[in-house]
Amino acid sequence: EVFFFVLLPPIIFEAGYSLDQKGFFHNIGAITLYAMVGTLISTFVVGLLCFYSAKAGLIRDIDQENPMESLLFGALISAVDPVATISIMGSAELNCDPLLFSLVFGESVLNDAIAIVLFKTFLKYYDPEGPEWSGSEIPSAL
Image (spheres, rainbow, N blue to C red):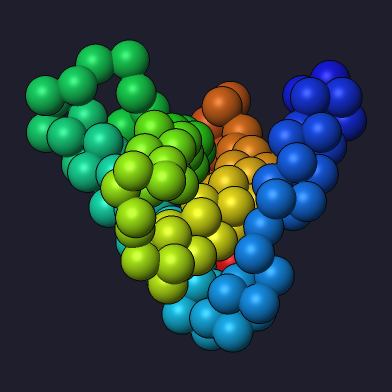
């Protein structure tokens, strides 16, 4: 909770303050599509790959009956922060296309928010004590 209430707000404020508002809002559709679809795909691919690898015996110490633990990991790992890419693209020597910079920067900001929401949602449905869980709960969680 300290992260969400103490450390994260200054980071979000700085990102919003330095944001090129015209480029961001002009491309909000593409940015949102990349952030939402990309994060959802990444979360489920990584999570379900871990879950089925555990079921096959390739990975130990992961719950083989409940995919929520693996989906929690997928949501956690899908929040990729392209800080190095953005800092290189923002340098004056590179002269990067402003559209590309706006898309990558906007997607990285929204990607983190979507990953946090996914993680908290999966955490709400996760019960490590052997829940009565069915696959029909994933759509209702989303």
